[in-house]
Length: 355
Image (cartoon, rainbow, N blue to C red; front, side):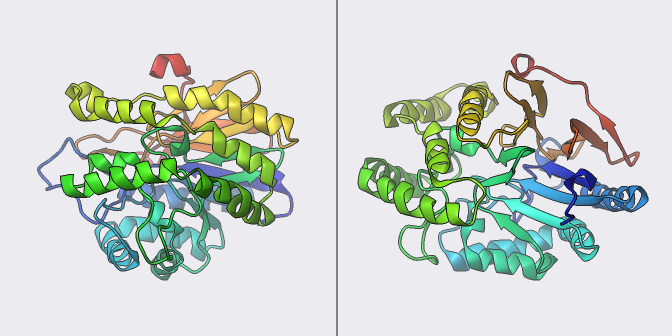
């Protein structure tokens, strides 16, 4: 990492959703990870950095991988990692290109790749792409420049109440599920998921220990202090009644209600996050998130909000792929056109236009 951050390009991408298997090849409308474009993108980042004499840091801001809901322990998680590497060799190739050239790559855990919290999963992934690969369990933060996280913690059905310590028992056992796993899991597993979640939501003592002990320990290795982490953790906490009602709408609503996307929950959290950072002396000019799949750049009262969208798209399209580029004096939402091998700045759209 360069000592002069003015010479550093921080590139944010998210929501590849690279899973251990893909739909049959004749399903042209099912979104899949744009792997070939990612290899070209990684090569272009290296070429641009070399030509301009800059450094590059790539941040995959959650859900780079997509683990099936059936993954229940370390053994099944490792099997899934190996399957993902076989199914998406372009992901492996692109990450290797960057790491072998000495550029930093950071994977932030999201709700669909929460298995990255397992140390054994991190090590297996490093075996596939390179030992230099870095991980963040929740927040990517550079003082005075950027605060970034996946964003699922502000989404009631995707939130995990003890995010950076989600294990039920030891590190090799099951993990605390997000309620959204019901939408993927078999019915019997879904019932167990609801039971585990409701028990956890009632366990106020457990949350108290998490905020008191786990977050205090995490702050020792982080640039954000303990109380700031606690306040950020509380932003996404919602009453269990509203969460269950939202899940019911997802399960029994119209097809549009079940699959439609909205970023209202995230936009509602932005000002709270910004205010917490400001009042705790950790203010930054840029807030970057993923999760919604809705690429966006908006100047708000306190900071610029950017969402890096998704690199998962239907096979039948070659739509440009969004990414965020931060430099010391600029924050840009750009698109990568894999067919022409070029990056171009996207038109700025307001959050209201996308919700």
